[in-house]
Length: 518
Image 1 (cartoon, rainbow, N blue to C red):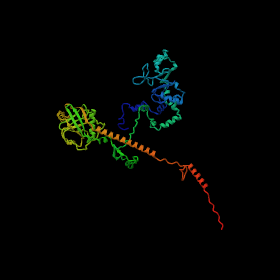
Image 2 (image 1 turned 90 degrees about the vertical axis):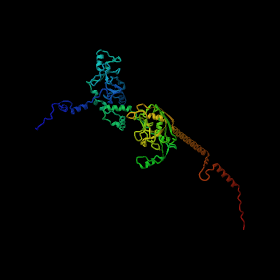
Image 3 (image 1 turned 60 degrees about the horizontal axis):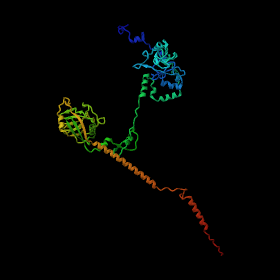
Image 4 (image 1 turned 120 degrees about the vertical axis):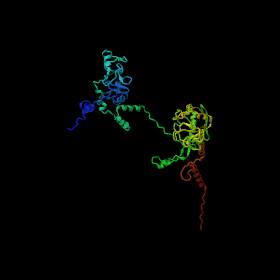
């Protein structure tokens, strides 16, 4: 015996000691056998599917099923799945359970919640479910054999006991007939083989709650139908001068399918439209300080200009404020939230910068796109109060001020706070579009396609007429009556020729030579 051998002893019983030594639940072999021999089914579950019932029905023995599961079983086997006795659809009684606000089953008379220890009974003639206590006190003891809700008469034999805590053998799943004996037919086995092809068949480890959730998901889930995008055909309007590159990709890559027909690449519809823009656009922004007339460089920055014109026409900028004024630098607006962090483009996504061309921030009144970085243009814009060469190559220049210089000066003189927000609201009252070159470009593309379609129709109709004319002028091939030389001569003509030749030979006289005597 060493020192400090009882130093770790506690003056109380631990949970493990109480469970394993002095009491509590002992998970030994006997308890495991007992649990294996008795598996109780809750009265709220179907005795065939082991899932909570939705349309409950019961047999004369008080066994509860779900109507959607028991009906096909009776149709196939004609037996009760629990007792194995003969059963028909006429023997089933439709049950009506009362529920409280939480959805728990209860007695409609005593309002007591049904538990595993409650004695529950149903009336065969009506299907109403009560606690046995209510039937004893209000029906049997008073000899008043009428339904407590509908006042419909019944007999004592019409009382069906659904649950009795003293007789739980009918809730023991291990004694169910369809569990002990395999009642599956060949059709059922074939259905199971087909079902085994689905991964859901092997989800045997799931509990009933998870299975119920999956069944509900199966009913409510609607699979999305993937629409395959229609293949665009290149025409003379949108055909690029380069190919799609599928032939080269199919030759050099093992992941691509081999393609032998080289097709021209198809240009984006916006690029086709922008290539036909030939003039600038003009817009007027009316503020509470006066108007600002703007010229838009639509050929130089088509995406920024179209985004600005569409927003002006749709009233996107109406009643918005210029949230930032920096004297000697810029006047910034175009955010419907007025915070400097909002705004969306007409495509619902940021669009790329357009730095091509000679336009720069080299003077007062330059109209440019505000952004958060490279290719993050949305709806916000700014007008410069002075030349800002440090903004070149960072912001897309897409217009300039051509009228309203006094208005711009008045706005520049508005006082601001430390965060450059104006103390007085500078609001955009309305925006007017005077010239929209994108409409003309879209109309030009439409007219080109229309002319191309009419030309194709005229060419096809001309080819059809030429084909018909050629068929009409074709020389019909003569009919052959035999093979070899003279196969196209009719038999009548051949017989007539032979007959004429015979007559000619019969009329010719043959001169005989007279022998001479030497």
